[in-house]
Length: 251
Ligand SMILES: *[C@@H]1O[C@H](CO)[C@@H](O)[C@H](O)[C@H]1NC(C)=O
Ligand SMILES: *[C@@H]1O[C@H](CO)[C@@H](O)[C@H](O)[C@H]1NC(C)=O
Ligand SMILES: *[C@@H]1O[C@H](CO)[C@@H](O)[C@H](O)[C@H]1NC(C)=O
Image: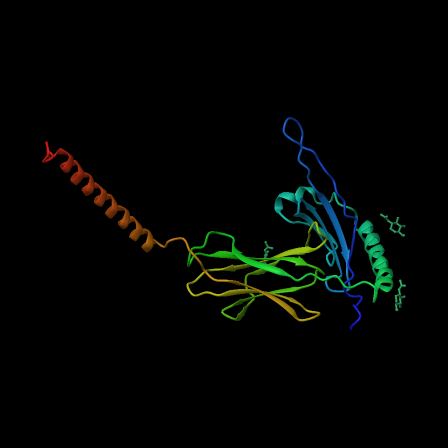
């Protein structure tokens, strides 16, 4: 049997959990604020992100050595995070621990691995011919090292693609999203392919247009049907009215 490689050992440091209680009358709600720093032999070799109840607030762009807000609304809080120097120190501690623990555990503990799970959906309600965004949500990532690609009818699509960083999840796995700007057409088949480069393992999620919002033509047809039904009921009403007015033969 092949000895488990030292590759998969991934270290998460500094998982901070803060439980904040909402004030006053209502039952207190617990929230989780977490900061996860990870280092791994695969790319990206370092990652750092703050999440609140599983939603990403900030992430650290290691190549650019700066914090980034996930949404423009969070921009004002940039700069309140730990300094680059502190991050540098934490990262080297992470790498040292990774190296020591890898040496200790290789051949002793099995390598942890998650099978990526993906699903694809549209950002807006589906309407054929109207620009939309396809979202590929990829979960159960461990280690955080995959490539995401898009295909339309089997042909690679690279324009209009944006893929997020890895979001740490509560179970110490990762999640990411890939976005594809597109205009849905009849007969489309889109695939979101997630590949783990190390073992060439791929997960594929499909998307085909289903139950699009009725087009104008269908709307007109439905409208026509409604009017026809209305007339039908009106006629039935008149017939019933006439019937009820007609003196019954037994009377
Ligand atoms: C980072 O590490 C260096 C060297 O060990 C130390 O001098 C410095 O104070 C540390 N910085 C922080 C912010 O902890
Ligand atoms: C781990 O093992 C490698 C080779 O077996 C060695 O070069 C390295 O120094 C070791 N690292 C630690 C932290 O013990
Ligand atoms: C998406 O990617 C494009 C380049 O492909 C970039 O210009 C744009 O800023 C990105 N949008 C977001 C929201 O990241």
